[in-house]
Length: 418
Image 1 (tube, rainbow, N blue to C red):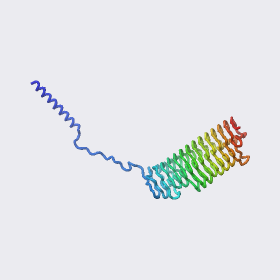
Image 2: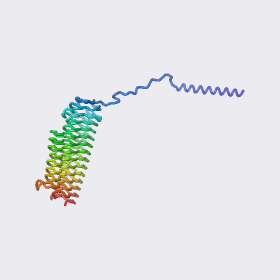
Image 3: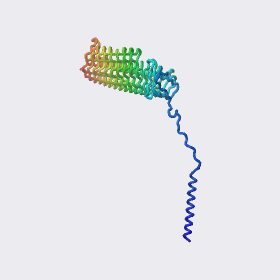
Image 4: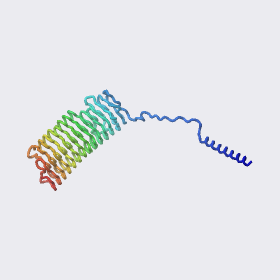
């Protein structure tokens, strides 16, 4: 009897537990109605590629006009019948990605590849990653009120006047190659030209201005610019007027290589710095070989600083006067190495020419060998002091003529110039 009672109690307990479990399952299961399907995960074309395409074309086409801000990209190589891409309004805030493709001109180089603006005051245009060739100017802005443009990793090749021409302010030109432009040009040739307060860095400028009739500016920058880490080579060969490797006013020129420019040219100034510029840590070598007239390695005028540069082998067989460094009117000239300039030149050679300046710690060696000074007035000299200088710790040896003259109005420290 007792056993049956226990069995009945166990059955009741099991039924209670089973009912409780079933209730909890039903209570937590939610509605038995099927839920709606998942929402669409598809994106619109603008969401996938928010930029605006610039179509490629293998046959010549008219300009692609940009009249509103935005990001644009080239979808393939594009051949232009006139201007390639034209930013027509003062919209600013435009990015053009060439996407590794080439924009090619087909009108004998009489129109720009990319033209910025009809109206003044365009700002913040960026152009990057591709090649522009066969135009009058690769990239061109005709107004000097443009600000804040960026040109990065662009190759401007075989244009008839200039590679990159941006006369406004606050621009950046970085990691570009400008080559083979301005061949036999009758007007001024500019590899890279920027206005004031700009940065020009890491660019290669080469083979521009071959047999140009007018002046050649490889890199030209106005007041307050930084020109650093560029390589400027083999420009201005046989140019008919004057070649400027790097030309600046009131700017910093540092860490550049200027090599082999101005061969057979009329004349050349490899680095031409005005109005309080700082020229430091540059290498200037083998420029102005067989130039018809004067050759200047570094020229600094009016309260500049010229320090720690290497100036070597310029002006070999030049037809007229050769200066390694020419510094006039209140410069500080320190720590430069100046050697073997003006060998066999047809005029007088001055390794270092200064007046009214501080001249400390320069090494001036073997300049002007076998040169032919034009008169007793224009003698060859290692260090030529025009007067009113402080001169200390310089080493001048084995230069043609005299190693260093000594005008009475200069102050001398301990120099070695036998």
